[in-house]
Image (cartoon, rainbow, N blue to C red; front, side, top):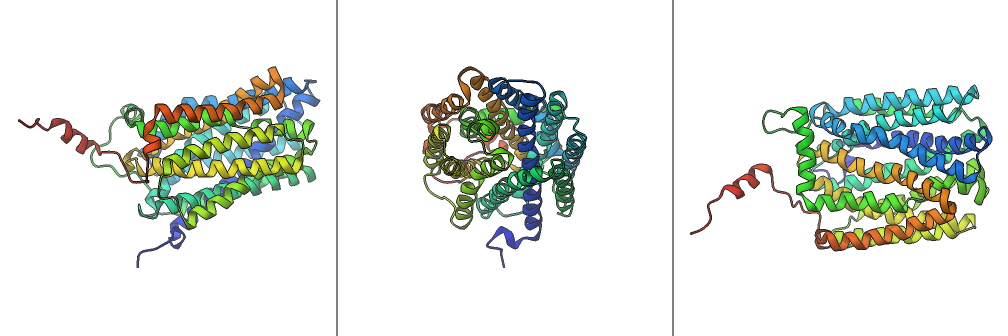
Length: 430
């Protein structure tokens, strides 16, 4: 009998748990790196609030530069090699980073150059992990189950995003090095779970092209498919402007005064809202008018960002962050489903890497943008500016990419290359 849920498939269950452990570990680690960067800048370098906030922007840039440079290589690796091995190697690098952070924290040897260097190395590992991991799921389930699989995968992501920073913050308050040691162990466990899945390679119809040619083909495919281009770039520009997470250390330390424990709770609040929505979507996925719903979700994301920026109540701030996460989950679910179902398997690694670059650009460059704007008008002004910007960008994209508004279902719209070639070589009717 055909499975009716992805969780009935053993390989998918291992994939789900591996994804959860990886997200738990890396998010805990990344959030604490941000807090320690801000704290070290203030305490050890004597920077004021605006200068230290700018350091958070530079931290985001340090993670983004390797992502930008290595994205084409990572996409080809996911389409040429066993995707499990790619994920395992990336997890191994992240585990080494966690150990280095644990030892440096334990010996009180942290500095801004060390934090920036390890953040850049984490960006290098993540650029290989993302495309390979994203491309594995469609090979484990049928096309009919893929929307549910994406929703369940999002639950793994969001639950890890909730629990990871919260537990990391609590452990950090007890022993600052302990959350990093825990992250290293869980990253290795995640890699072993991925390795236990059957080998996963991209499906190729013929001989594979040269790696450089494959890189070019990936970018050409996305550029040619305006539908995919609109989905990917909407996330890039909306979240680049609307991300409030870069300023969370400022709110935790100086505005709301809730410390690292409060930072962990705030960092997990968006994932609480997102997890509830993801659970609903895994039970009852969206099926109609998916493009319009994605656009309105981004508008709601921007509005919740503005509420968070202006709030001086910890509870109201948590509520705004939860709403922000719920809206973002709808957008992510629709976008990921559209991208995966509208991409041939032999290009999923490369398209996922391009999508991952856009997501990382929106996150890391968004942190840089927030840091720069915060240095000019303060943290509150920077977050308000970002929320308004996300709403404006959504309106512009709805106009210049009408394909997004017209997307009624998740049905694939791409033509395989062979079909496209046949269409272009047909003789016109006489």
